[in-house]
Image (cartoon, rainbow, N blue to C red; front, side, top):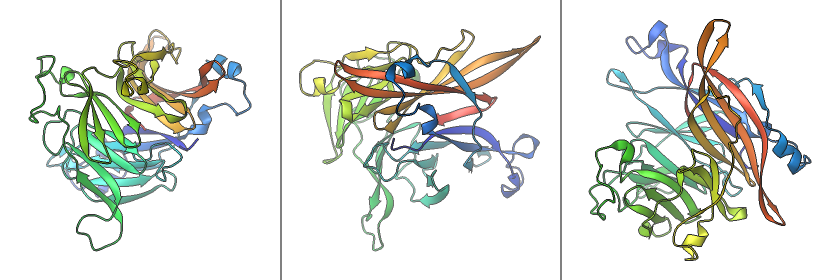
Length: 376
């Protein structure tokens, strides 16, 4: 594996609120913030000499405690109200990236920081060209491409790079620069939407429903109303891939060694699935078709409700499937609402017959009443 950690970003109260000043603390004198808990990715996998059959048969959830946070982040304040922060993985999880386990944090004003989970070091960086509402991100090598999930303005898309910034007389550093907005962004003069409910944010035809790295120089973004578009990172140009939408929900992960893309199915209740997008790119198929849809990766009790799903690439054909559930814990006559996070290590393995998906360990974490902001 190339990634050492899977990161839980938790929305928590943060201790020592005296640095905030009067009037900027929450209930009981505590300030709202985020805590980042790093879980060793190796704990989700069996030893290398474990047979595939044994690993797939191991379905019992194991219980573990959430490790102590490696870093806490106070929420920024916008006037008299606390603002939100977004966290995005910078390293792509592959062997070529030097930034695996680095995390970019950004607030609603576009101010950014860089956190190294391995050394627990943090530094400030240049501001984004423009703040991003509900950003989505894709890492390619040591670059981070960030777009507003519902692109609406000319500065909705930009990239974080390390190098000499334009007009700089200093050394290399991290900086942002704007990229051409996608053709489907509102106000860009794109084709008419396939649907007409543009005022519904949940069904926004311009909103990005699925996205992925197709290869090292092409990013694919799929919308409900305008099909799928490709951004060429070498030429900073957009093109149309097709009038269809990708069969995934959210980010899909490319496993280059096996030529497949993995994600959560948009049509099969968030089940893990795989698709060969090259068949579309080469013209062998008119639209993407799912090659495989796997059964539920977590044997959750019926009283649990799935609320969030994340797929984290770890490198070397290994993935972490993270599921967040809400449930009820019964203790005698007392019923208490609880949240659980279940992390499952899965591995794509080539065989003589094709590919096998091996499920390793499923580890359940009691989140009590804490809210998961994101799993990276």
